[in-house]
Length: 119
Length: 114
Image (cartoon, rainbow over all chains, first blue to last red; front, side, top):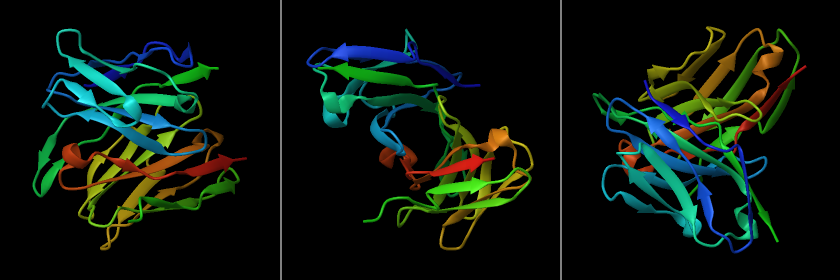
């Protein structure tokens, strides 16, 4: 079984400060990992994904995440927070189910971390 | 290009009623998945369809059902609505190689059961 734990339901930083959102996963098979952002009353937008290529993954809006197998972690960082980064962030894990016609898998999400940015 | 479109955007239903939610995937995407997001929680997987066949089912009661049409659009049906079914229902579409393109989500349908 796979699972995701996001430490800290609410993180608050000052504008210009480092953003660090923590995600630990559990998976008995090689995982694929995603970070999504959700703004109020909207759907989920993909920030970045790890699919077994480079362990340091760069995403949109200046975010990046590093896959650390030994620590089973995939923490999200951004060097300098902007007011527009205030949103909820979700880490998700999946694995490949090889089926005829293509490989598919469903996402398992963490409970989310709400990021607040203070002026 | 249009993204994943969901309809309606908001819906209010009474306990015991039936509801149908609709999703149109990105053009060329053959897989559609449905997720339920209760307030304050992460999305929970309900169903996945690929090429009109069910490929996965989450831990939801039989009151929940879905189908995918030849044009790859999908419907999620919920019977005998309960107050606890109030949530944001998200649809995601993906290509044959979801780990290259990622899963793209729609803006969701906000269902309120009163």
